[in-house]
Image (cartoon, rainbow, N blue to C red; front, side, top):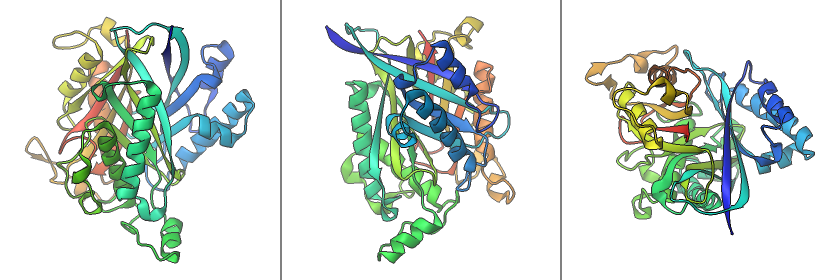
Length: 375
């Protein structure tokens, strides 16, 4: 008898960056076994920038809880469970955790492919590798490893790849210089030439290389954040100073899964494309014409998306002013993306990462969006 993967998904609201009570309650009830948790993907309520300490605060709170429950050190928790804390919940976006569990059972393959999840970690990245081919290559390797761990045999069955990677900080830049190395940028923020954008986009290209969407001979240091004709349709990347390596979570469907969930994806052609959200729901398995029914919506577990701001400053021919807003800049992109998703599914607790200006995650102007549903 073959081994099949049973993946569980739990979406849990948080009242603050340190609130892990919802996870603790599910462990207490037996609904979650901590040793089966493979990934935690969360939206925390910080500013989403380099100095967003809510990400590290949430991650530490998780490590404290799970190290106690699993009887291992906090370092061991980090090596067993990928923790992707994406900062920034502007507008009506509700902070939350999405917990992925997985266990391998005896069973038979099925033509009805279900949700499979694989996790992999890169080695620690050197500052001079961030935003360059060094990062692209190690992320691609981790994507392949995570895909194999999920037992997803066909790249067409990969629907969302979430990467959490390190970025350049002033100390990391100083470290590179002290060793006689250069870095891709000395801007540490989310500006067009900032470290967050370079780090996120090198990982997006790594996803595309790892899934086979982008050929290796098209990639080099000089095309990162310049040639946006190269992109991945399934990548969502987030960076933070709390990470020293890239952590990759591959979500797809597999005949070797008996999960009660399924995932699908599509592309929002721009930040207000509700049809792209609907197409992601259909890709996951919902069958509806104009709009999902109440019964359909009860099957939706979470919607995950990237929200990228086009540098040309227009949406469907209309100018927007985010690029000229010195107070909040492109932060509203996440709120806009979440509002569009909420208008379709009637729920504001969605995972929307973004705010970058242009990206290799999704085609020019477009944004990857995925939906997880109960079968």
